[in-house]
Image (cartoon, rainbow, N blue to C red):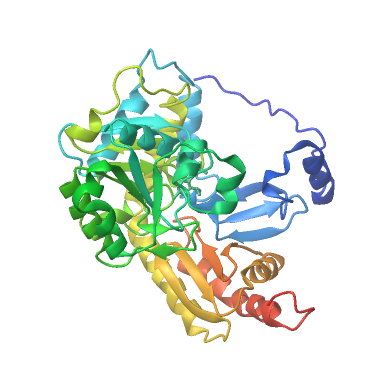
Length: 419
Ligand code: PLP
């Protein structure tokens, strides 16, 4: 392995946040709005900004930095792989790609004939699932109101939010959005003649971007029963919920179902870009044939090595248990504050939504950031926590100590804009 010590300079390395933000605004497309801070480094569950301030990171790159920042095992795996074989075309196989596919199939207890396709992101994983669904030859794809599946055109067609979709219409056709959690609507769409036109139903077990909303008990099991009866595929988008986020390897397993397709990204690479489409069983796994899908970076050995390292640490360090316990501690702690602005906490494991009694989530997030905690307002009245799975009880307590102040600041009478 070659040793490299040279560190390439970033022009203006001594600039502070304001300077970087000016340069950002001048050079980066404005799709994300103005960033809250400029981050320069991270360690475990903490990040530091360009002005040297430390923050407890309860967002983890939006459910992505599963192992926190700069985890030595992840850094070691990526460094070793990049120093050995950084990229190959898909005319060739690489060991990390194959080992990762096998590991995912094992973790999913995949039935015989199951297969994996690797891409680079969640949207791409859902594009792959969309193409699998199209290959059934049936025209309709069902998805849920409130669902989020990504910003590329196929994934956007599955996504519900009109503000995201409308500027880009016409989108790929055939997608019908059903009311969230409504079993009657699901039955009407899948039973009888209607069901014969349905290629797939695409759902998240817990809607992440939709406000951390778990599917009601029994919904996913009914979805499995109804899609099977109709000959349609059940696609579970585990991009946000997968890889330990909810305290289980995959959120759908809690519902006792085996989907036909599972899509993954975010936490899978622990912060290194990777996405995966897993087809479970022979039928779903034979729908995409040779030459019908591809990606230059799909199965990239460095990304695959990162994912293998992430899965390894989650298992070795019992992070599913930790996510479950620390998540429960957070729920108890937040609800136990008895703050009038907190209606309750929903979600599973370390994917939590603090539901507020008023639509002031953005103000709570700003106040928390000022106090040194990173969170996100996923809806006007919901603050999302999706911290690294390595978050400790003690770090959760740091947050619980800061939260009342952030809630107070957000409720303090100002100029009335928060109502
Ligand atoms: N699916 C779900 C459930 C997501 O939460 C997201 C991102 O938030 C996506 C898909 C899109 O993933 P990406 O941003 O990697 O394209």
